[in-house]
Structures are given as C-alpha cells and as structure tokens.
Length: 188
Length: 196
Length: 199
Image: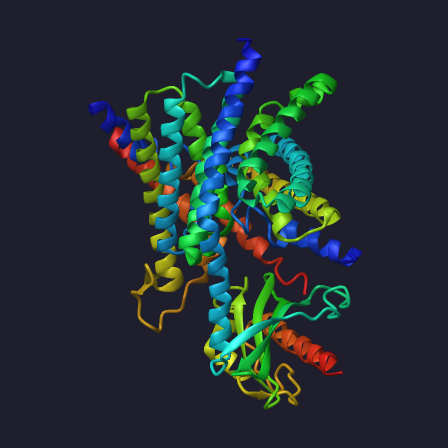
C-alpha cells in the first residue's frame, strides 16, 4: 500500500471513530443540556415572580431590538407573559445591559395589575468582584421590588447607587428604563 | 444590524487593553512567558500570532455560520477549530518557505509553536460566541493580537533590563517574570472605565 | 512496578508540569479562584490526559509520523469534548464557572507535550503512570494556588467560610495580579527548596 494512502487512511479512520463517538456522547447529553438551560430560566422566573403560576414566551414581531437603539447598551432578549390561572397579571423581560466589565443579563418583572415593578434579578454579569458585583446583593435588588412604575428611576434620586460602582448601578437603571419604554410602546 | 465606527473602536480598545487576553483573561500564557526573553523574539511572535489569529478567526467563523449551525454539528467545534488552526499553521509555513524564505527564516521556531497557543483557539470561540459579524470578527482578532503583542513586548523589555539587576537567586528567571507580569496586570486594570 | 512508581512520582515532583516544565499555565491561573473549581479542573485534566495517553500509547506503532500532530489533536479534542458535554449536561454551574477553560483543555500544553514526548514513544503502563503523575502534579499546584486565593479573596475554602465576618475580601487575590504574583512566588520557592535538597 502506498505510504500516502496509508497515512490518509489512518487519519480518516481515526477521525471517523472520533466523530462517531462524539456524536454518540452528544446524543446522550443533548437532552440534559437543553433541560438545564430551560430549568435555569424557569427557576429564575419563579424567584422573581413567586405568585405566578406559569410563564409563556411572548412573540413580539415588531419589537425593535438593537437596530433601533444607537448602540448596543441595551437589548431585550426575550419577554414572557405571566399568568395566574388564566389571567394575565404581568410580564417578565430578559434583557442585556452594558455594564462595567461586559454585558449584564437581568430579568425585570412588571405587574400590569398593580402597575409596579415586581422585581429585578441579575442573571449574569462580569462586574468587578466586591464592587459592581454587589448588584446581585439583596440590599441593592430590594430597591426594585414592588416599585411604582411612575417613579423616575433615577440614580441617587429614587435608586441608591452602589458605592464605588456607579457604572454597574447605572447599567441596571438603564435596563429598567429600557423596559419601561418598551412597555410604553406595547401599550400603544 | 448596522455596526458603527464607534462600536468597532470600542471592540479594539476593550480587546487590546481593557480585557487584554493575557493580563486580564489569563489566556496565552505559555508562549508569553516562554518567548518574552527579548524584544525581537516578542515582536516576531506577535506578528506570527496576529497572522494566524486573524486567518483562523475568519475561517472558523465562516465554517461555524455556514456549516456547523445549519447541520447542527456544534459538538464538533473543539475538534474542527483546533484542526483548522493546525492546518492553517502548516499552510502558512509552507507558503512562507516557498515565497518569502527570509521571513520564514526570521519567524523560525515560532510558527509551529503557534498551534498550541491557547489564545488563538480562544479567539475563534469568542468570535462565534459573541455573535459578531465578519467585520467585527476581523477587527476583534486583530485587536486581541495587538494586545497580546503589546503585553509580550512590555514584559520582554523589562526582562531584558532585569538581566542586569540584582535579583535573589531563586527568583531569577521565571518567578521574576511572573511578578513583573503581576505589576503589568495591575497597570492594565487602570484601563477599565476607559469606555463607558 | 518500580518503573511505574518512578514515572508517577516524576510527574508530581521531579518534572512537575506547571512549576518545572512551565506548561499548562493558563488554566492554572484562570480557574484557581475557588478551590472547588481547581479540583474539578484537575479531575478534567487527569481524565483527558490519561485517556489520551492510553489511546495514543496503544496506537503508537500505527500512527504515521507525518500526521502524528493532527492525530494527537483529534484524540485529545475528542476526550475534551466529552468532558465539556458531560459537564454541561450534569454539572451546569461548574461548567459555567470554568467557562472557556474546559474546551481550552485541548490546547493545554501539558497534554500535547506528554503525548509527543512520552505516550507516543512508551508502552501502555508507563504512559498511564506518567499521565496520572502529571495530572496529579497539575492538580496539586492549581489547588495550592486556589487555596490561597479563595482564603484571602473570599475568606473561605470550598465555600466553607473560615475567616471572621469582618474580614474584608482581598480583591487582589481574586484578580489576575494576585494569581501572577502567587505563581511567581511558588516557582521561586520550589527553586529554592530543590536547590537546598540537591546540595
């Protein structure tokens, strides 16, 4: 057998075995991986809106995403309709907001019944440990619980910024304001 | 999705300085520590890395968006991306040897070493994970390579001078290199907040 | 048997991959912020290293020399992908914490270097010994760094708080500079100790 042929054949066989075993492992783990990300989201939704029975992904075809905003400081990733029984009681928006160290992923829950912000929860962030990372702390997130939507949502007015983390705090505010403006658009 | 010049500028600054791949993300350390013994080595490696990084980012991005996703082959990503890099490095070596023998000789040992440079593989992953378009991928990979080269040359410059300094015997060489890197890392933290 | 023990010990001390051979550095510093991450990473590296060494050693007479690097890459990346998928499926928080460094195991110089220098030339049993030794040597170093970083950076070890509540977290240890400083010191200390022993 010509040496080049032998080389190519060996390479091909090993690659084939490798690809096949990976395909097998992929099959086995795929379900678990999908369930994990779904579960993670469901858990967060439940935490932010404890009185809800279920959440449904909402399709908003003419929602302007980042192409409308001048920069990608704020994006709406998806939004969920909140149900209690059969009644729509509010919405939860999953948004990204540009922070100090990168994008901050948050959930913002609105109650359409009481016209308040039910709460805010940070899912992922890359803020500075000890400073900006405090946006996940309960004492910061408390400020957003059951907050009337008519409030101004301004730093150091009705929301206390974190000491040493103005930019991180501002990113959260920006997310809230973005959601409020989106709510306004949807109401029309 | 329109990409403005400002967006690209932000990518350049954050990839090269604020989130410097070596000093802020710990990626690419082996060649960094190994090759930063003098400035000319570092520059040579920087160029080689930049070349391969940009090329492989473009190729892997294209493969990902036009083949992997449509065919749902995401799980083969690790294997294919690193093979692409290895093949590109081989190709570059062959092409250089034939067409630009002087440059090939100047680059010498750096070329084969590049395959195991974690930074290149990492950048190919980031290029697709960050949902960049092709232009952004190119700008991003060039910027990362720039940051990599700057950090390496900085360390090399200091290490050249260190050779004549009175360093305690057991800290001479690599330990000192790491300690200096720690100082460089602190300095680079100062870049944070450059972009609001 | 004696040979097995020799190669095993060599990986841990004599030629410790991180502190002596200076390979595998990226993951050591990036992942070592919490001890549990270090142990997970160590386990992943030991798995990929050992499995790859076994396969490469078994196939060493069959692998043609010209394409040996691509074949090493295919083998190593297969096991790396397996670790990545399994972790994403059954250990999601850990997988998230380690981020890109699990896939980066494929370019962890340790595995490539040992495949080239050892597994492709030596029979099965010594290859296993070398892989295990190197893997454990790596795990010991990364955990040694992790213990210091987590203790001073978060006041805990394995998420068990050890320092009083009033302790202000030393941010320096969590951020890159602290990591670089620590490993520089560790290498220096090892140099010092080994010089003492050799005298």
